[in-house]
Image 1 (cartoon, helix red, strand yellow):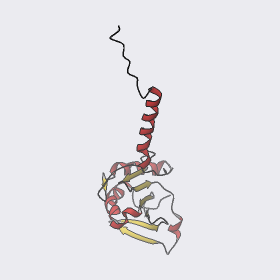
Image 2 (image 1 turned 60 degrees about the horizontal axis):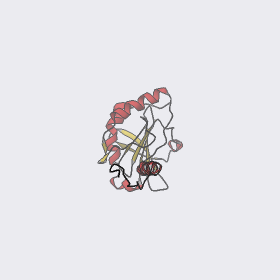
Image 3 (image 1 turned 180 degrees about the vertical axis):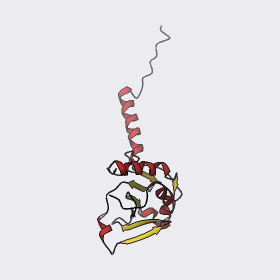
Image 4 (image 1 turned 180 degrees about the horizontal axis):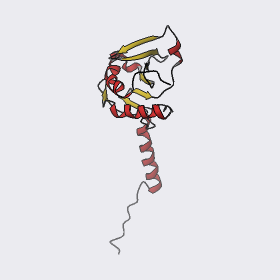
Length: 163
């Protein structure tokens, strides 16, 4: 009689266990915010990297939660994510003399309401364009996110005309 022989069978074999772990690992990424990464020139990229290091850890009371793919040109805060993209192209709407604008703590912004109820703000009169999208779920606080972002933008992105 062999007392060392173990007759208990494993319910999940290695292949099934690997599949289960892979599926579990993938499911956590489904709720992550995402943002297209801009592709500006070298000068603007340098400014955007400077901005990234100056950005606050919280915006509108929400903790920083950067979107995928990871980049120094993008940042995010909260679950209904406030998304910042630095080095975006000049919006066509900036040429419209009837376009809505707002100034928040010394930073000028072009205001664009989106079809989904969100708002997109793009800096004006700065040497790089910085875009901030506030989702519909977070629009109840008005321009509070822009108040939180203004000091970093003023510090990192000089006044002037973007190339």
